[in-house]
Amino acid sequence: MMLPAVIALWFAAWALNEWLVRRRFASPALARVRDLAVPVIFGATLLMLWEAVTRGFDVPTVLLPPPSMIWERIVNSVPILWADFQQTFLKAVLSGYVLGCGSAFLVAIAIDRSPFLQRGLLPLGNFVSALPIIGIAPIMVMWFGFDWPSKAAVVIVMTFFPMLVNTVSGLAASSHMERDLMRTYASSYWQTLFKLRLPAAAPFIFNALKINSTLALIGAIVAEFFGTPIVGMGFRISTEVGRLAVDMVWAEIAVAALAGSAFYGVIVLIERAVTFWHPSVRSARAT
Image 1 (cartoon, one colour):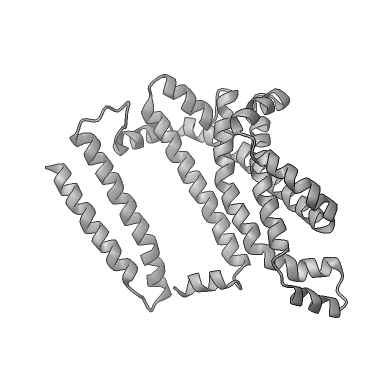
Image 2: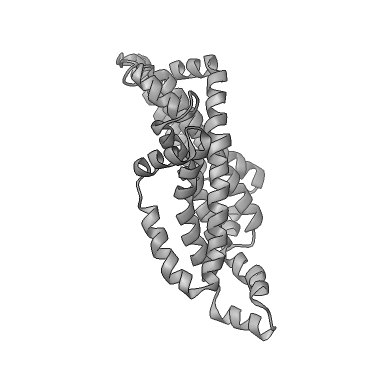
């Protein structure tokens, strides 16, 4: 009887979400509450359906554990999960993300100044971006050792090219008329860069930052499969899969998903604060 009731609740929640997204609230506060309530309702009903299906059909926990079992594992393994989070996210992901995106931004400025680099470095960057992680990770482990610096090096390689291409494209986004206007004011290259071209490139840059926020976490976790100390999300996943402790694997996946979503959300908030003038941000706030 539990499964039909959960399915009925699922359709009721779906109807409620449809009603909420079609409503237009005059109060911005109510609109924000609506925007938060819709994904929360959808996620909660999805977890309930998952729980009902796994319990109702006696799905083996090795194949798919119920959410309650995963939550119990999370609660009972907080010290292990926190140590893995520190090793993978706070060390490898953040350091590689900052170095990869920062170096790509500086190289994009150099490419913008030099047509030679634009014709010679961009094709090379395209080649590097096509290299598979499973080919890069063992090499980085041999170069930088088994600890987090080798995982940060993989993250740098993965995040460099998306940032480079988007920044170069963004620097070319300003129109010729706007650049001619800056020349009539006798503006130097750097004045034009900071006052016109970088603001115009900001949406492109933040697009790359958002893409890299997920790529960095994926790259670090995959890199840990090829050699790491006895700590880290990737190490824990590979180890617990071998022991058939699938609930721990899902606990690590849940922590990684929450960390990646939070990281992405922080970038989005910074983007809205920096590019508040952009039409896409203004239209999103208006709705």
